[in-house]
Length: 144
Length: 311
Image (tube, rainbow over all chains, first blue to last red; front, side):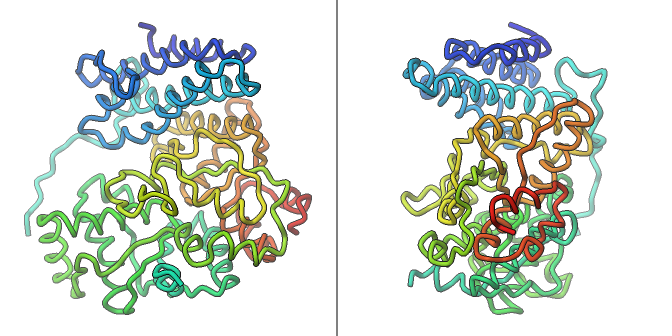
């Protein structure tokens, strides 16, 4: 599995090339790897299961367990799957290049969202540059 | 007339803090559009913050109380059964309060206790329905009504509709959504698309319409927010859009500010315009750019709207 930084570098490389429907499988795999990093950083083993035929969706579900804010990338994951289907089912479509370009941007978004969130959560590979959003102190509050 | 068409003609208007600050253009354009369409907005008297993210992060039940106070005033002091909140954050928080008060006895206990201490009537489950500005225009005027009223068509304007992540999430607090034809979708929202298309615009296929703009981290982690926003701006441009239509002051400000920041820090310039849907509809209905607060936007779109025949 690539590191988070390597995933970002690979996305940059793909973005610098002419959009190609053949990138679809790699974009999907990079999306899965991004989510694997998130799941691992939360101390879980990334699932091998699939949901609706996609491991990406199962990984998202696992990553959002007890963390509703992670659902902010739920539709991004679903868009990724949608574009994968478009590109693999209609590889000769006149819009295939444009669709590949959009799939790249959607994958980018998932990458930025998750890597940024990892930084904020003080998880993963960014500890040296991360900052706590707030002190993790339990404050005793009166009930009245 | 449908129930909602009648019910939403006069609503309690809850602008919330953002619309009095950085999102004032949204406030101005919402009021101007409502007036133009003959809809009545009665601002919630002595309203308070909905609890936004700050209070919710410390104690979600206090946030629920704060939102419940707004709904209590609308119902018990103003005698209104609908609160219209144009801000996605306020809309989300009031919907969450509606849901929690109807379903969680612990929340009800906290809301009752603080309301009593504060000396106002306690909000009771079901007294009020919270709606978004999109629901308000869609249900009262609708696409056909807008088509009849268009003075300056948005024709030849290519728009990416950006809803942000709070408008549809979490799904369980929006029981009216995903109810089939005519209702809003939480996975592919379309109310803004429908309204702007009725005003003549051409909506583009935009895959990031509910993606995160990094709004919550814009101060603590500006770089991530800039990357997220830049990606949204680039996706909109790649979709062929000239304009990103917004319906949330936080998203809107984030898109505007990080568009500038992306150019300054990453050297990447994007040209897509960022305009509230209420501004676009207002201009389509014949309002002048200043009447919908175009001058209050950070990004300058005067030349663009002039070129499109709206000024």
